[in-house]
Image (tube, rainbow, N blue to C red; front, top):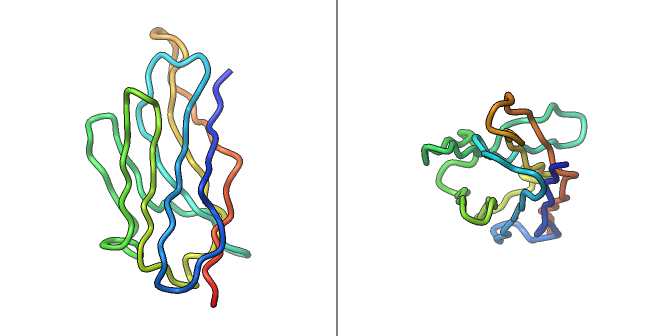
Length: 121
């Protein structure tokens, strides 16, 4: 059983900062991609930032220069440092990972339960 548990959401004023964290636990053989997605009301879920096992990262254009994803492979965690937050960043943020539970099985997609980020004055 694999779980992704997020933390760090909350309410922040425009221009403020928040840091989200996600920890993967359970029967884990390998973790490939880890990423953050978000879903705002009445909008589709979108990729915010991703981190591959190679160390390569990618960001949505809307967050480049403001958000930074970091990964600790030893602890199976990722974090998302969000600076200069704007009301358009308001959404539920989801942690995502592709994980194999054994070395001979195909990796599967896992999602966290989501954490709410509200940017408002």
